[in-house]
Image 1 (spheres, one colour):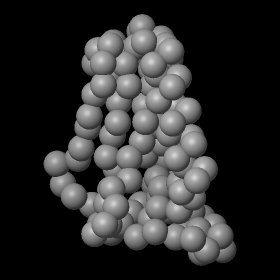
Image 2 (image 1 turned 90 degrees about the vertical axis):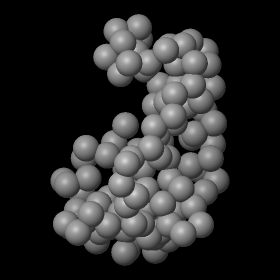
Image 3 (image 1 turned 90 degrees about the horizontal axis):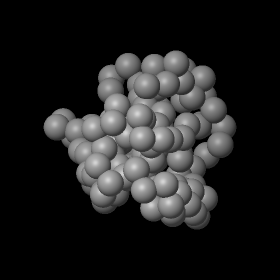
Length: 110
C-alpha cells in the first residue's frame, strides 16, 4: 500500500506489514486497472528471504499510460539490484522509521 515502505540511508527497506488490508488494496487496484483498460504494472520493490513486496500501478488516463510506456496488458517490473528488507508490525517502531526516513522514501510511492 502507498506509504508502507521506507528506505534508510543504507538502502535497507522497511515494510509495514498489513496483509489483509494490503491484499484488498492490491485486488482493488487491479480491478480498477481492468476497468480502465490502460494497462496494469506490477512492480517489485524489495524482498525478504521469503516474501517479495510489490506495488500495483494503474495509469489515470491514456496520456499517463503513454508516459509510463504502458500497453493495454500486464507489465512486470523488477529492480536489477535486490534490496534487503525487513518487515515491521509494531506501530511505534513504524512511526520512528517513517519519521527518520520518510522524506527519503517519497520517491517509492506509486
